[in-house]
Image: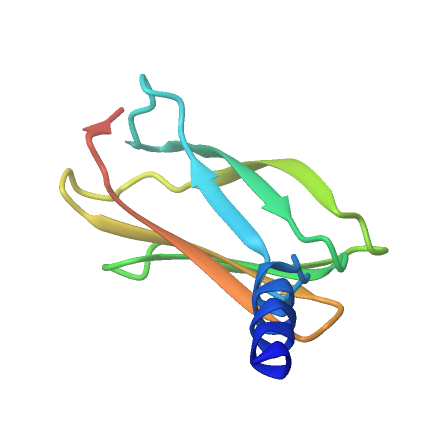
Length: 127
């Protein structure tokens, strides 16, 4: 009986012990509530990145459905755990209202975990 009680106590203690588990980084793309995508104009956003193991790289990609807007940017980091970065991408003129634009931010940490956030927008105004 004592052996079972001791085993149960050890099992409960082991299950309640907080252990750090590796997880993927956090990446969030956000926009000002008043933001409207215009052609020509600027795609303006904010990126929030976080990882306890340290951020290694970020791949930022933007594509429009009509291929008028395409671009990639890779940024390397030195192991920062938390960053907020602006995004300012030039949008060319000539894109039609309603043209779909996709922005993808993909982050890699030093343990090899990857996370991504995707934003789908459409051109709302032309100048």
